[in-house]
Amino acid sequence: MTLFLQIAVSVIFFTNKTLVLAGKKSGWLVGVVAASLATFYFFRIELYIYTVLELGLIVLMGYGFLWAGQKRPRTEIVINSITVVAMSVMTIFVFAGLMTAVEFGSSVGMLLGTYFLTHNRISWGWSLYALAHGLAAYLGYHKDQQIFADFQVASGIVSLVGLLKTR
Image (cartoon, rainbow, N blue to C red; front, side, top):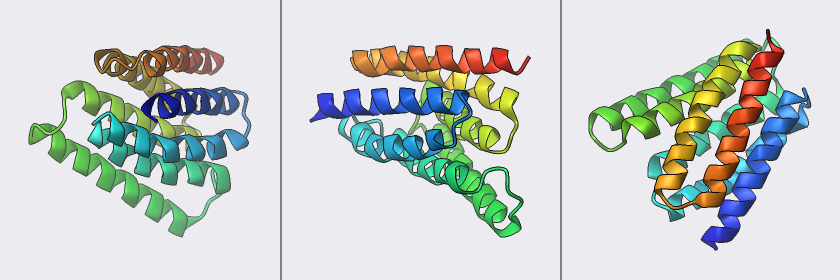
């Protein structure tokens, strides 16, 4: 089961990044599917903070699919609140020793990268994604999750292409 989840999460998240890079709104919906599967995958490989992170990503990617680019004050308050809560939880976890600095950096990069991409701060979003995918690749190799780690490297390259497109 873990191998199936590793492959599915890796391929679907890579597809998410390529669709977002191509400017396809459906990329965010694909991201919701990937993040949903990833909650189970990360739980199985005992990366519990990533399990929590994926819940935040489900909300942000759903927002990207449904409302990104629209000025909806109530929606923005909810999205900003969820982001602040997730960042606060991660900060508490890292200072309590429940999360490594690498996990923290990767989680913050994924969360804020998604936030910035859904809010048209494209350079920030792709930069944070590139950092986050590099750190996630390191973690994947460390956890002997070769396929996941390799796809993180590929997603990091997609992120760098996205960053170069903004220049």
